[in-house]
Structure formats: structure tokens, C-alpha cells
Length: 318
Image (cartoon, rainbow, N blue to C red; front, side, top):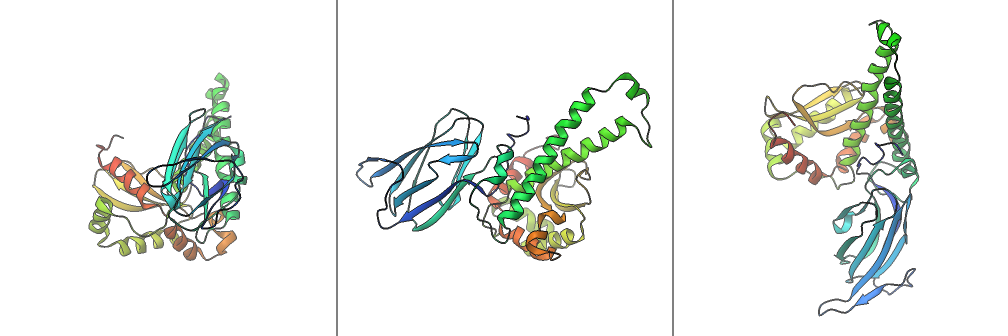
């Protein structure tokens, strides 16, 4: 497996299936262990994560149950996210992770893998995102996988260069020029998409705490920030980033027309908006503005806020 397949992306593609919460006691697809406590009985389940599914893929509990999941990955690093109950865990290979929560809501809820785990990730079952279809995400992930593959392929070709290749270096055309140019393009495609997918899957809204204060300081209001980011996105041919400028100590929305145009020195990206047509054409056609509205509705500001706290603690050398 390529070394970059384990890189984390927070995306809403379901490995596992559906979490059913009912008031009536349903038939269980897996036997659970019930532990009696002074408050609530504990419904305990064992779960295996593997490429590319959870086993079991469906769990039934009653509203009000205390649920304990013992989850283990048996191959590569996976993730387990059940956002409606604030559950998000990384699953390292062969290490059991215990998750507990109260099933205090009635309904049907999806759980999914939150860590990119290989080529089969794009075909995982289940999906829930406002305004962005499963088909769009599946096709988008195929492109992301392609950037990983090409980055590794280019690295191998660079390692195999001979003295005569170096001797023929030329700014108009040469093998080394071509490989070096496309290396930056492929790497940009990897990192840009990782930022993009990592902060999707939330419930939109607005940031809080220090990040909100900084947004209001630099843009006068959160609505003004959204207006600027949306207009920048409509104007871009590739990507838009909200970046923290270490030197100016402020947030700025930057525009880039290609995967490898993020070269703003002393600027750390916080938000990445993909404006290539592949990110929205299936769902919106030429209506990029509608896609950007949906992008805002799916942002996970908690993740962005945590990244901001980490960034502002640096000295411009992170």
C-alpha cells in the first residue's frame, strides 16, 4: 500500500451502515452483553473495522440505552465517526477502542470511517451531506486517490534519474523539469484535498471563541467573511484558501488557479474550498454559487477552530 493512503481525511462516506435507534426493542443482528448499573443498563457490542466495512454494519438499541462499542481495526488505520452523538475516534491496527454514549435520540443515524484507508474507501456504503451528493464525493475521492498515486509514481521516477538526465536539464523542456513541475502539482492535489475533506462533515453555522473574534477583527463580521470567501470562490479557477498570515497576523482569503499555486510565504491554510468543476458539476451544473452555499452548510468549525489554535501558537516556522 502506498505510504500516503493512511493520511487522514474527514469525509462523510459510510463504511459501516446505519445506526438504528428505536423505542421498540428490535431483533438484534448481533448478540450484545447487557450490564446492569444503578442508572441504565449498558448495551455492549464488539465491532471489527476492515477494508472496507464495519462488522456488524447495523446495530439496534432502544432510546435511552447506554451503549458501549468495542471496536478494533484488523488491517489499516480506520476511523469511526457517529457525529450525532459526538463520537469520532481513530482506530489504529489491532488496538481496541472503547466508545460509550447515551442513545438519547430517536431515529436512524449513520456511522462512517473518517480516515482515508485506500482505494475502496470511495465505494463505501451510506452517505449524508447537505447539498453534496454521494456520487460527487465518490468521484471526487477517485481524483484524490489519483493524486496520491501520481505523486508516488513521480517520486519513483525522480529516484531513477541518471546522470544524462541531469545533464540535459533545460527550462524549455527536459525530463527533470517535467517531473519537478508535476511533483508540485500532484502534491498540491494531495494536500489541498486533505484540508478540504478534513473539515467537511459538520453542521455549518459559524465559528466560536478566538477564531470568531479574529474573523470579526479581520472582516468586520462573519457574514462579511462569507461574502468575501464566496466571491473569491466564484472568481477562482481552482482553489480558495482562508489562510493565517503569520507576518500580518490576520486572516486573508487567497485565490489559486491550480493545485500548485499555494505559495504564499508565511501563510498557513485553515479553510480550503475546491472550485474545480469536478467538485460540484454533478449536483449544480454551472451554479457554483449554490455549491459554495452547501460547502458552508457542511463545514465543521470545531475542527477549523482547533487548527487555528494550533497555528496561532506558532511563530511562523511551523
